[in-house]
Length: 154
Length: 147
Image 1 (cartoon, rainbow over the protein chains, first blue to last red):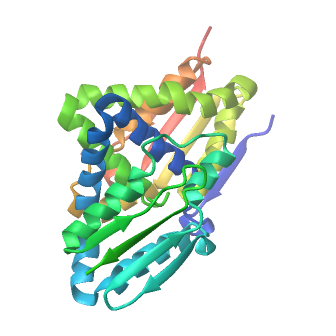
Image 2 (image 1 turned 90 degrees about the horizontal axis):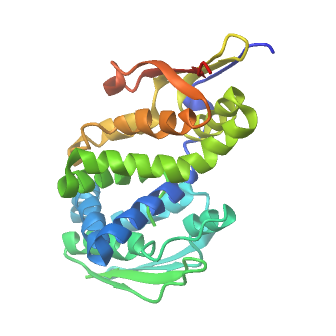
């Protein structure tokens, strides 16, 4: 058999490895099985506190539009702009999630998201809101689709 | 939702979280767990079916989807499958988020995750160069083990 060679530059492809959704849930599930709900909360809070430092700074300069742009962008990256409906006013930012592209992908691969998966939204955004001095509310979460509604408000 | 493009940063925080609770041994156990479950299910099945070519098939998908800067070679007659990573996007993302104080041995998981699975199917990582991982570069060579 002839020797096979594949050579690629970063610019040749879009950075979108959806299997990382499964890896993320595997990590959350591992923590959940070992440390329970409190462990998952601690882990995801640690992540949010570290990751959102620049976004919190941006919020302090630009207000709720900074968070809107951040959320809008991740759904754009995930090629799922139609998954969310955004309502932004001077006092609140409401997001209606019709479906979660991560949940959709996992299910397509035959993977059922763990019972802790919704905490990657509920806990992470609650911590973001807290660190911005905002109020965060999140309604019911549909485990089948990841559909939910949440808001950040002054 | 945490986007799949943010996963690497979550992963780094996971290693930090486990390290804080259980030390490096706990992190190593996690890497072994993921290798024995998730990676075994993907890479393991690929090499079970195709042998060394299964490595080529597995990494063809992941390295392209991760938009890596790489060269990959498969020489079945010469018994070698090699990856020459010249721009790992995961490590680049880690470096770009230095303010998060990423897990120091972030790249350590790669050496455990894959070799551990492949050995179950008679394939081993026989050589590697991890001396430049901080610059997002590494090299791995795999071959069929002698019976």
